[in-house]
Length: 511
Image (cartoon, rainbow, N blue to C red):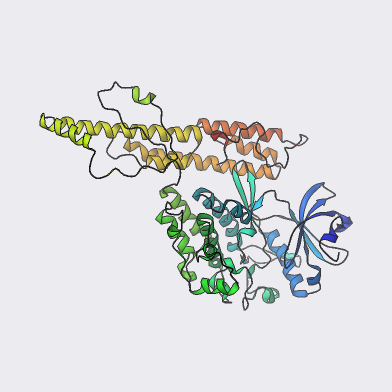
């Protein structure tokens, strides 16, 4: 196999189990092929160490260590290792699950800028995978397990984040632990592989301490890289203006920027003015030059992002409420009025000076001795608006499952009305129901991807049909899971939405 393309069609592995069908990618360490498992008859991804590096003991050990790390990291958010072997020519390889979808890098090249919800969902799942690595795993060495060892990825970037489409949205998988740092003094055999006296990684996303060759690289280095990725997803550019300038950059440009240049505040980037101050604070804290100023763990970062999701003024079309009718109109007509939805941003606060017509009405009421009537009229207007907000938010939650939009609308409710006390209880109730149902859906989704049909059905049945939206989603999900039992032909790619679900329908859209 003198070149990757000449390898196509070759059979490698024990009993020539794997047939190399397509070259998916090539890097410094080796090539990744789409291969066929001729025993199980399924597609897999096979990574083969570069022939020029196979005789180099250091690279060979690094390659073997990547297999050991990925095999030990048992997470739905880290690519799964299925086999390891040596080709007839003596080239080591390992077999991974074949993922259907695209990398985050491909997504950003196509869409450039992602919404707050999508960006936070992706970062949260990356954190879930990194948490297991950062807390420590037991590697399999010489026939026995090691003591728990902390793993630092050191090469987080959009190309190493894979997005698998599911009915729930993107399932995130972390790729390529080839240059991960093993933080363990008791593992001397890793010393020459993980030493930080020279830079290893991708300059664009590397932390200042990683570039400087510090020996104190820990989980906060990965958090810096996550900050770079999150900044790019939200803004469509980098924190140092390189992409906006359009000029060619080299490793020295990035190294100096990470070391001494202050990142541009996120909300000052074009198209980012709608982002909350809290969200900007989270991102900028990830990008702190000093590791001690960053979040101490991915758990802490996740908690900050979830808090921000509660207070975040969402950049989404919020239903525009009609002006409240005057009190002399008969009751019951307001509920029948159509609620208009606008693509314009939420209305700004009314100017401090009231309209001329309103001034005239108030003066007339006061002149006629109707000061109390004027107060009553204003209270009626406030109650009417509060009632419409409550009805619209409830409809968003019940019929569309749009929990965040519904809660954002609740937060615009005037205080001191008969409807105001309900908002806090509703917010807590909606969040609790949504969180519980999302957990069931996430378990069912992963089970479907792994073709564990009974677990998928069991998890889907745990969805509480408390609203029309969740009832419909649960029924569709159960129907899809039951159709995929063993012996029944699968939909193409397994991961496609249920064939009887209209993907354009808001009731069936992924969360």
